[in-house]
Amino acid sequence: MQNVARAEDAAVVAQVLAGDREAYRLLVEKHSRAIFRVAFRVLRSEEDAEEVVQETFLRAYLSSGRISAPGCTASP
Image (tube, rainbow, N blue to C red):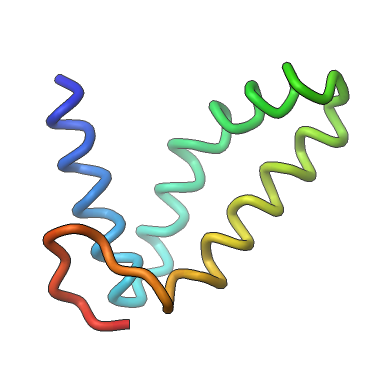
């Protein structure tokens, strides 16, 4: 089951790298809750945890032009 989820994520990342903003939204929706939980456990502040989530996805988006996914043939 984990391999299927990873393969699905890899496909979505490939779409993001190809410029698909909707695919990026899907990644944010899927993973933001988990990032929030980790940040909240560390920071013990909802506001700070939300900021970490926003910063995480902003940095990921801004960096997407400089990375490539394994098996991805999309060029940034």
